[in-house]
Length: 389
Length: 218
Image (tube, rainbow over the protein chains, first blue to last red):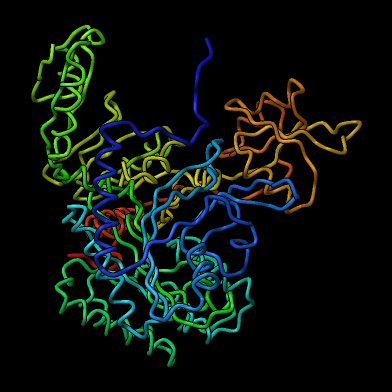
């Protein structure tokens, strides 16, 4: 007897979990539709070149690659933002801006630690092209908030930063690109130990050494952070970015979001990818990031379309976990089991179909196929049994 | 509840000593008992003892908010955690070691037995030396003695184990100490209790008052 395993890292999602996920997905997709966004669907396989450029949110090691018959490297998409940008820059190039799109799709990342094929994540997200200034950023933050609401998660935090702050500080330092990237990476990873060691050896003023070492710890409640923000304002770039962040905070206050906000001045994604606001959202109880997003204006330029771009992605499984913790409210529809014997099949079928049209869940089964009616109903949760025997 | 995973063995020994010097966390861990979990409801903290290589797994997933483990494990596993403190305890070195008697013929591609294949291969990559890495789980010193490998990459404290097995240190790779890591999300959401813990540990290490530069979360 063969054992039918699935490749390590993959998983089957079964009935109950699947139904909860579906409800969550439908709510989120419905919300995005209601915001006037247009949905697009892109293929699972994309060419490697799309993700291998300088401006990429995913590191190369994480991408699952394969070779097609022409010898070209093809990958399982590791991200949905880039394919959406590809579509916006090509097939939807002529569309009037602002262009607002949303998607749902599975992305695949290689499992660096274990020896599995990789992991599969379901993402639902939105991208907005061609909106200006802070309104673009506020829209995505607002949508993140609403996503939590749709999911029924009330205990969450939105963690906001601005890459211009770190970029601005590093403008003042005469370091090689390699060194800069390494140090910025340490700041983003909050590797305080390594950072201190590296910075101590840098040929820069002690004032900057102090500031750099402060950055990974420079997060907390907005009121506290903005009181101290002057400590790290070293030039106009930093001032402008910090000022922008403050404006966003002020508007978020008006939106009633202040209690859920964390400002993290040391937050960093891929330095070349994000160009402005960057944010991550967490739900109490799960150990992972539930929503991730930000501004990436330069990406479209790379693809030949000059316009602003910002977006966010919801990690559906993490959101489902957070919702389960807070008990997502499932509409319990009445489930009916209709049993029939051969002679009354048509009657039973007609009854079932009209019942279904009325919105009920009706399962139609021949009486000889069920050996233990009680057990069957118990396992599948039937509220009502109708007999057409 | 702040959940902290502590690596069993030398790290746990040293950490429980350090905690004795703090006022807040003094009598929570009792290494003499066979318990693996120590909870103090009043102080809202939970310590549990874990196999060293499992600490980053607990912290990475959020099952533990923070963890204390040797840098060797962190270098080998590379999880998505924030490394926020060097406790400067459990000092040892990662070294390349092998038999003290010179070999007649030194192979072009040396066989290196180790518990740390990633650290070992990165080290030899940097040196541009081709080697064959043999991953073992324990008693690494045995490998060159019985001829499984030409040398080993392993951690060394006093050097006694190596000496007793007729091995010497060829090269130092790096210094290792115990570090504190925290879960990325917990660091933001449980910042206050994490900082309290970090400050207490820091004070205990430095044996005095420290200026905590951390910002507290409400």
